[in-house]
Length: 138
Image: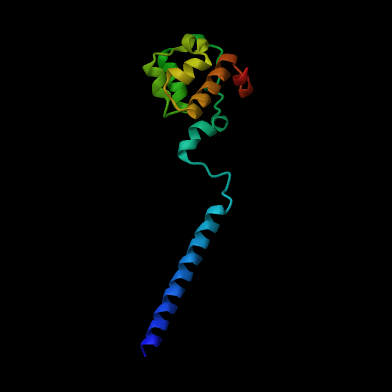
């Protein structure tokens, strides 16, 4: 009789082990499924969707030399709300913005590389009054 009880317990343990393995395989399969490339998180919106936020009313840089620190802050608040305060803290006005270089943005703001490059792309666009971000790499 005891042998039958032991066999039943072993069968139950085997069933539990198999169920655990099946659940692990399902989890691994879920992790490997492709994700929708159109899904964006709010964190990525500031950096990745710069082009989508283009606003012709804001993106007229002909008088950028006359922009105050507040004008620069308001502009970056529209495109990069999480980082606009940096321009205000550093007292960057229009003339300063025109003179900014990559090193100013990469090291002067204390940002991670991704956001710093996104900001620099926008600054180059403003400096050249051109939406072509490829100028960033010149």
